[in-house]
Image (cartoon, rainbow, N blue to C red; front, side, top):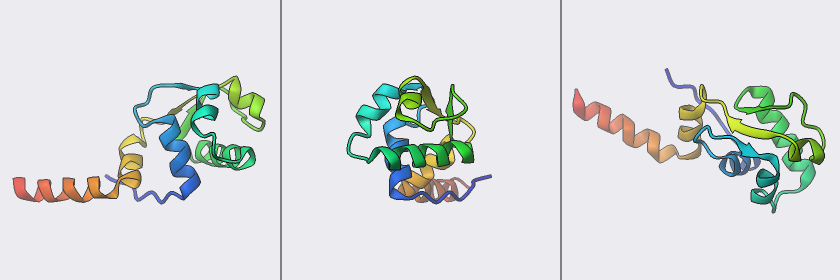
Length: 103
């Protein structure tokens, strides 16, 4: 059962910075990877992704840059496949075509 997930540009940038493998990423590394984003935008986007359950962190509240630096983040494995489909829509279309051919 696939969920239709809609992401904005900031969410896409943060998810790409974290990576979709499920491996934890240190907060300092996340800040380096998302260097071109404004700090307030990064914090707001990260909090939104965490509240939706798409991103998991070892700290419950991430409100300050210092909180991000002291935390590690990873994509929730329950949403990983759906987030990949949202980030790469052509991947989803190709899989549907392949499934049709197999039947």
